[in-house]
Image (cartoon, rainbow, N blue to C red; front, side, top):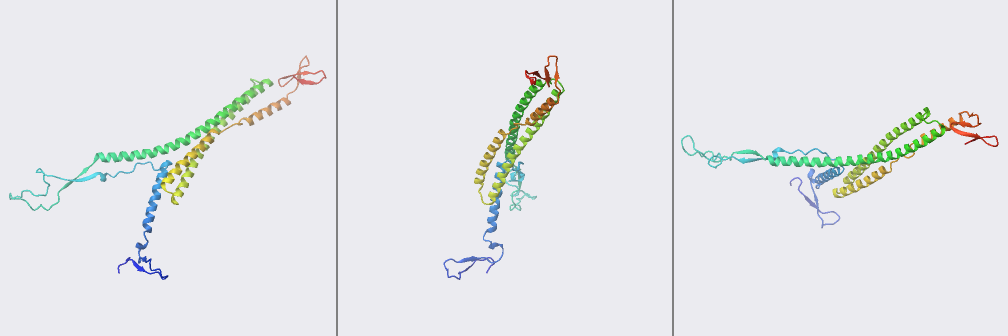
Length: 308
């Protein structure tokens, strides 16, 4: 009996209707498990490659094109339109029949146009993959830019409010144009510069969040593919997941805010102005009018001093 030859036997339970097939030794008795595993590995690899293309993560280099695949062998013909090696005259003027059994000679011909077309097709495929990657990065960049611009809009509004309130406060105190005015406006400028940096970092944060959410979606789908998810279902879920991530990221970018960024500065300026007022001595003029840090105060009928 040859090795691996099937053997039939009857199950002891009495079930004689279903003979079993066994294989003796060797890897040939795996019941096709190796072939099934190879097919599944191939399916998984192909599905993941498609998924990576959707997310712009696939290798964007042209596939190599084998030049040898475009070389063909063609027979060489003699001047009498016959193949070389099929006869001819010998040195004695007779017919040379010794070469009748030889194979026709051939030469290699390279199909240049077909090769160039294959190279162009490989490059076009790589360009498409590269374009997908660039499109994703452009989306992330746009989200970051939108977030930064939204935050800067709030920042500029806050600066305008702060400068207006500061000018009123300095004018009431009679300090406009002085050193206090210069210092206060320098604080506003410094705070605004800090806000610009904060807005830029906020944009980077939103952009990175969008990229991270897409990557989480991709990794989850890869795990699902390994668990048996088909490539068609994986593609559908990938597009849906990216659309959801994009909407969420855009909403976050549109709601990026630096509202209240100048609140601390305004509060500090008000406290500084209040403390300066408390420490400013009261001066009187000839009419018994008093001036306190720029505000005119008059003497009331009851003899007390009141701020005008």
